[in-house]
Length: 348
Image (tube, rainbow, N blue to C red; front, side, top):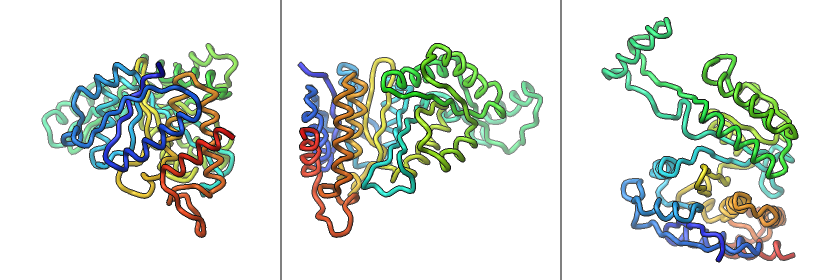
């Protein structure tokens, strides 16, 4: 019996692209027990019924194919994180021959905390009674004036939240042959929140002496990423900074259609950032690369490397790629043909 993995798909396009993923994974020789969930008639107002989460809990691992309701995708993604306690967001940024980019030799991993910080969603509309109470209470506590017309948001950062995301980043580096972890923060401005994140990062770094550790302020890392992104390896950071840097790095390596993973202590869900009907969604590249992340997570490191290399070969050759990757003068192929080319590259 293979690894149990739930495969969530939607509509004809979703079936085609997820089938391409299955073909590519099968070619690596890793046995996956795919448990198919078709969601076209499942979701209501951007939410999934609870039984889908029960299926994922039993399998512990899931892959989400392209969803045709981009307006509701964020809500579905949030529901998955909250229901399964997925506190890690992995977002790789890797340049490939065949994908236009202003940079070369970029290969970094963003490890983003997903449950705390500004994105925790603790905020109050400026005219509400709750906002007035919060302004008054926080002014008394801090001794600082808050304008009467101000909306209020709270940024919680905990010892546990910092510890688990930073420890994950170091363990990821150790398991995947990475050599340096950089903690990203604003500790010089927010000494008690980002300062806590940095303090815990420094403590945990001592438990991984073989991995180099540094830290950067968010504005410094943005500048350095634009100047020399090829020198970075693993970046770990709180929620908001991770969102911003993930989008920045996606643009640097060619676009937002990139793989990502949401991982917790018990469960892991893999997929892509882009959704909706488009040529990009008919391109199976990012979902297959999400499959490589899944293989890493399952401990199949060699298979993950072979799958990654095969995708890079096919994309670099440009002869069997989907529409958004095909140069002028080359024949466009569908997702199945591209997956077949990837399977042949794995076998070569």
